[in-house]
Length: 195
Figure (cartoon, rainbow, N blue to C red):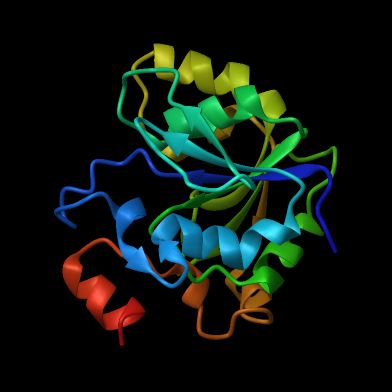
């Protein structure tokens, strides 16, 4: 099944200060970490975008979206992708989350409808904003929030309709919650990806 109304948006604009090198360029099966994610998930979507600054891709099945603001925040990447998206919604993941399961994506997309602007997992009591579906109609709200000095991804949530997906629902598709593993440090990369 291909999600025709949702684009895959991979965020690669972080500073990667704890990793010590750009996370999206980490060596992985098929090339880099970005390649690994696209190879695993790209075929589920009609469109794949990678948002960031100075990103280079050696493939034709994804396109680069340059961050449209200088402010460092995942929200800038999300906003940039929304502005370029050919679909009404985007499924957002970070480039340091290589283990997102297709079943989880199916779970979230099945809960997206016209009554909610965001569909987001709640794991261990917290939102997972970089593994969620966003309606591109929220772009103006995000822009206003950034203009007001906001940076936190969830900071504008109170202004839109949010559908929370409980951890118990997520575990039906991802029992060990591997989708939410972040490769933030060299140890994470060694322990989770290289092991």
